[in-house]
Length: 640
Image (cartoon, rainbow, N blue to C red; front, side):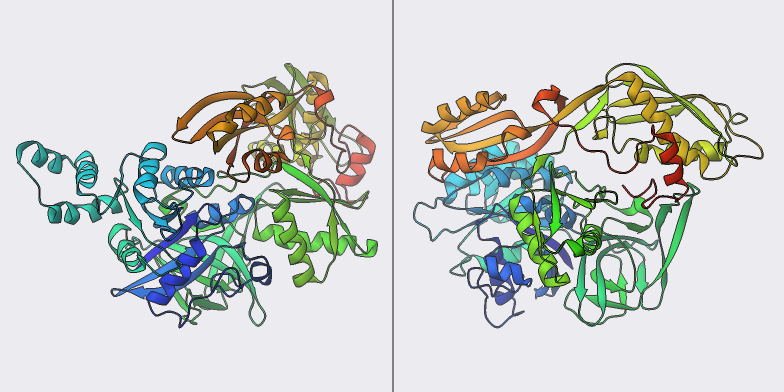
C-alpha cells in the first residue's frame, strides 16, 4: 500500500497528472479535464465551475500489485489549510513542477513544508510539451533552490553524485573503484528515496500522457509503505464530507490498531466551561468506507477511509498520539491574517448564517467564526478573496443562505507594555468565592504565553488552579485593544478559595476578570503581523519591486539573480501588502510570483493599526459580567 499526496504550484498540472495516473492504472475509462470541470478529483460543484481544486480529494488506484491511496491537493495558497491537513495522512509525496515556469514561490513553500515533516518525495517536471520547457534547467533550479539531493534519473553522473552523498557504502565504492555500473546506482536509489535521503526527478507531459508510467513506478519504488505493525489505536481526522444518505463523514488515517462498524470510540477531552474539568465523549461508528467508496466495515493500521456516525472534528486524534509520525498542529503551514464581517442578505437569517458558518468551521479549524450576540455581528477569519468566494458558494449550495462580506481587515495582536499586577475578588453576590492575583510581564516577540503558579495548594486547591490555567485562553482571547493577547509571562502569585462558598464556576469567572485588570494596569502594545515574502520575478523588474517594498514599510533581506530572473526575499507588514499581488502582476506582466508566510509580530503604532470592538461583556464591567457568567444575559461569557 502507498498513501501519497500530489502537490504543486497552481497551474502546474497537478490535477491533470492525477487524472492520467487514474487512467493509466485502469481506475477510470477516460481522463477528465480541469477546464471542462470533469476531473474525477474535483467533485464539488464550485470546483467544476471554476476549474480549480478547492478541497483535497482522495482516490484509489492499483499499480504493480500495490494499492495506492492518492490525495490530490489544492494548488492555490488560499487553501493552504487543505494542503496542511493532507500532510497528516501521508507517507510520501509527488511535487509537480512546470517545465516551462520552473520552480515557483509556492513550490518552495511546499517542499519546505514536506521536508520539515520528513515526508519522502520525488519531483515530476511536467508540461514538457510546452515551448520553452527545459528539464535540465528546472532540475538545476530544484538543486539550487530546494535541495542538492535532487537529480534527473536519466543523468547518470549527477545521480551517482546524489547517491554517494547519501550513502557511505556507495561513497566508499566511488573512491575505491574505477566505475560503478548505472544499474547498481539505480538499485540503491529506492531505499534512499524512501528514507528521504535523495529526491529523484522525473519528467513528462501529463496533458499528453507522457511519463505517467514512470510516475506510477516511482510511487511504488521511491515512496515508503505505511507501518502497519502497531496494535494500539492511533487515528487522526483530516477532513469532513457530507453524504446525502449517510450524512456527515470524517476522513481518517489510522497509524495503529483498527476501528470497525458499531464500535464506540472515545473522542478527545473537552473542557466543561462550568467546571473547568476535562470530559470524554463516546461516539459510535455506524458505517466505514474505504477510499474507493466500498463499505468495508473495518479500517486497519496504515489505511485511510471515511467513518460515519462519529462527531470527530478535523484535527482530533483518537488513541495514542505518540504513534503519529508528525504533529497535528493546524496553522503551522499558514494561518489567516485577515478578518471580515459576514451578513446574511436576509437580516432575519443572520443567526442561521452564524450556525452554518460554525458547521463549516468544525470542518476547517482555521476557518474561525465569532458571533457577537449583542450586535448580531458575525466575524470570519479568512485566508483570501478566493476562499471567501468558495465560502459564499458553500453557504448557498449547502445551506441555502445568501451572504456578503465586508472588505478584509488585518488581524492584529497585542501584549502588555510593562510589568503589572492583576487582581480580582469575586466574593459577591453569594454563593461565590474566588480571589486571584497575577503578575503579568512582557515576553520576547514570538514566545507566546507562559504560565506558572507560586500559590500553595492549601490557599487555592489544585483543582481550582487547574481551572485557572484552563480559563487563560478565554481570558486572553481579547485584550484591552480587542485583540488576542500574546508574548506575556503570567504568574499566579496569590489568592484563595473558600471551603463552603466556592462554587465550581468561580475560578473560571474570576480568571478573565483578574487578567483584564492586569492588562489595564500594564498598558497595551499593538502588534502587527509581518510577512516573509519571496518574490520570483523577471530580473529587470527587481528595482521596482524593492522600491515598493520600502514604500510598504518593508525591508529587503536578500537578492539572488539567475539568468533572466531574480529572487527577492523581504519582510513586509501584512496590512500593506493585501492588494500587492495585483500590483505585482502589473509590474511583471503576469510573469512574477510571490510566496508568503507569517514571519512574526512587531510593535505597531496605534495610528497605523486598529482597535477591535469588544465581543461579549467586558470583565471589568463587573456587574454586567457577573450577570453574563450566571447566564442572566444571552451568550454568557464563553460564547466569544
